[in-house]
Length: 305
Image (cartoon, rainbow, N blue to C red; front, side, top):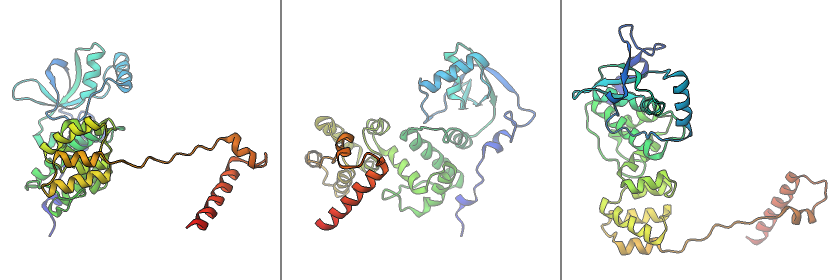
């Protein structure tokens, strides 16, 4: 028996806005809407940064205007909620413009969410937090449209078979494995401070997934200990923290003890070129030198095993 999620008809970009025609059908017009009437999408997971890419967009808007209209839907309280075009709106504002071209459509919450995620998820250099919340929002929308509630997955890659089909839909559209999508969604269980550490590359991805199983109270204690020791958990340490948490035995003392453990320093060996040249003919290339070194190391390893 096929899951209802597999039979669900997802609204694609072309379905919503027409293939080859940014304005959708011929009855839809591109309007110039004041920036003050354009509001961000509720819970919009994608950050609008003042980086080099934004500087380039601002220059383009100054010179050519906004070439691709944004997509928005009417708000009950007035104005319009942007579904796509948050960066274009910000660039327009920085470029000194007061309006932006927009296509207005009537979209329900799930249609808007699906399109908002799909129109942004293929961007390069997305932050882990952006992917995490985008995948979660899309998965929740798919589950609502499939007529069944979401359920917590167990384990880092998830063991909830009822949710597997919905996750696969998200994964296929994003070009990720469904297991990786589940890992990203787990990150939404982290406190904002820990998730920011993942974005800042201060906390590696896999340990962060394991830490997402800690309770909020345990995560707060962990943040204090991380600051105190200036150390973040390794993957092995994060797994132990998770285990103690699941057993109801994760105290601040246990956290402190685990993070205080000495870790083996990585071995780094630098071979200076001038020193190596003492042992090889001048005619030897770098590749030939490397092959000799690896051959000798292989022999040494065999003799000492």
